[in-house]
Image 1 (cartoon, rainbow, N blue to C red):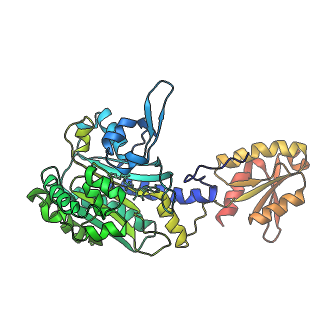
Image 2 (image 1 turned 90 degrees about the vertical axis):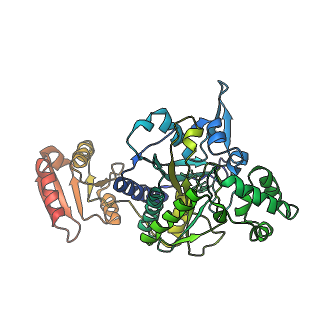
Length: 423
Ligand code: HAM
């Protein structure tokens, strides 16, 4: 029997791990600069958290959750997205009483039962940033700027921010009514999914990718024309901030996003470079002013977003970005004879304590083969411990460039190497 990874799930091999590290490091430094504290929540949460938080009418809850029942009878789900878990933690740990805004970020694996295709995995990593407690649009602008900065830092030069406002509970119901009455006229033309969406979540018809649905949508009323005064002002101010920041945004009246909790701002960030397959968002997010209350907390406005790490890495690789995080060893430790091999093990430890990166091949006995390995690694200095040196507590430092060698006491070895490495 040959075991394989599950469809849409991948091993992260050492050479790929450098890319994950790079994204993580860039996020960490942005988080530090913008004052976000890292939070990691469990991968398994109560199924109801997502049914309620992400929303019952979303594709995620409908058809993409990996759910299980424990032996004790609990219904749990592998987190398909981060926001509900962060909100749960925000309420559970009493963060509502902390000074506002409370700013949290995370980086970890998420799970969605997607139809496998480019950029859609069943296990994928996300980094997310969430800001709680402030409803003003300057927060939305800062969240967008933060994600834009992270992508820039990762080498993306040609980005577009698609943005829209989907109103709030005051104005959206009116818009929904007029949208539904428009869409009903074309009900038979819409795809099967949109016929369901028309009943359950008509706004989602707006961002259906099917050509026949898009043709209908092009004539639909636009939500931007139905915003109440507060939502309109909020959005207008946000666009002014984006302009002041010179961020390249594009108003997309059909952007609604696939999660139920959004109010007002929604946005996605795309790389403009054409690559194979369909264009996929690198980052998605928005404002969710009602979610904390919906999940049992106080009425708390909030705004955040998340980026897809694999999508970002796939594009970095497609652009030819090469990362190799293996640091080169500074020295190679060779040994000849039984006593020398035993002593070499403790000398290796001594070098580690002194922060000198050392390569070795303790499983080898032949000096020649150890030296040729050191050559292959491109190491300049080889430390040689033979029977004589082991008995006298000494060690040979051999310069592979030119072949010059010097015997020093083991006590002075670190000092000598550091001197040589400095040159
Ligand atoms: P989302 O748009 O569902 O939003 O996901 C955010 C990002 O995760 C996407 O833009 C994409 O890059 C990546 N992503 C999503 N699904 C997959 C997949 N199957 N395979 C690979 N990458 C994927 C959220 O998850 C919200 N929680 C974002 C948010 C935070 N909104 C407010 N705060």
